[in-house]
Image (cartoon, rainbow, N blue to C red; front, side, top):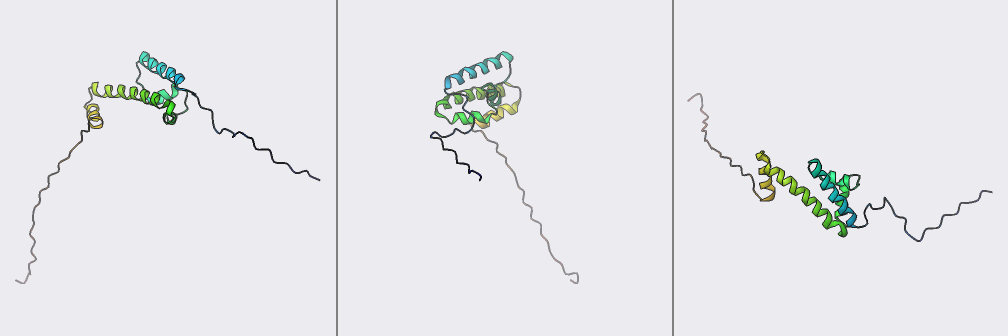
Length: 133
């Protein structure tokens, strides 16, 4: 006679799903963020969101957005991203590239392109003439 397997008892605590978070509080994150910016400044490389994500130990840049939704990390992430944005804006307006300045004016100061198209209307008169006339 084959004995039936008895189902295992359900645990009282829910089983956590997924990987545990890398950061429990913003202080540890701030330390790594500051180190990232210092390293970029030392190497004279631009700040980037993917670079920041890598320095924080994330597997992709989208993890930053996940942490930004958590109230305890929101301000820290916003401030770091603002610093990246500030550097990018400075690069755009100090470069000799006019397109960068135009981009800054459009995106930060509500400038817009206006295209004017002029139309000329010509009237063409057509007559159907009877060849027998």
